Amino acid sequence: MFRIIINADDLGISQEVNEAIAECFSSRFITSTTLMVNMDYADEAVKMAVKYGWHERVGLHLNFTSGMPLTDEIRKFRRFCNKDGSFNAVFFRRMNARLHMSRAEIMAARGEAEAQIRKYISYGLPDKHLDSHHYVHTDLSIWKAVEPLIEKYSIRSVRLTRNLSRRMSPLKRIYKGHFNRHIRSLPIQTTDYFGSFKDFMQCRDEIRDGSLTEIMVHPMYNEEGVLVDTSRPIEEERDYLSRIKYIKEFY
Image (cartoon, rainbow, N blue to C red; front, side, top):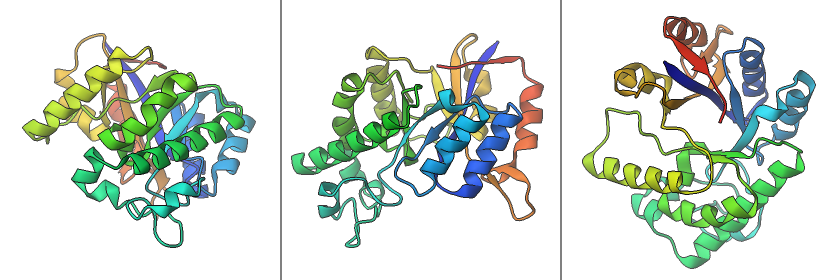
């Protein structure tokens, strides 16, 4: 028996994505979503969640790669921001920066993470689950910034680093295994497996019976107005899952 969480990433990134995620909740395809609090459509997303009754299923999608940061200090560092102050994702494209940053950069990242957590809490959202855009919380340098905030703000659950994938180098597999063991050692909830819908299709024979798996989806509409997970029609994913014996669950 599979136990599955289906989380829609990127709530708040655009009006279209907000509407696509709302439709996924309405059709009961997803169990939860995570909010990018620094994006222009975050307020609209929260109002929608409250209006339609799924605000208790909204976690935080920590963001260091898109839009404008909430704090000024992080804008001083070119690994994080352009001259206009917007996030540039430079650190994300450089493996050395993903593994190591200066103390000043880590403290700036901690200040930004804390500001995003505080804004999330200010919305009155009770879920207190944390994941991140482009999985940045699983990069060692960002994790050093974020980890002290987990206990401080009573974060209830944190997403694993992606471990459902057949395209993984031995070094990456070692790092991911170490990171996930560390996450599981903390007094928080998490899943046993995490990956995309495609990862789940390819690796489901490797998933232990009774374990809990998180599948991430990215709802949006294609040019024809069809609800898709990035490019795959969500109806295809729903049909696939309907043929599998599983239970939808929450953290």
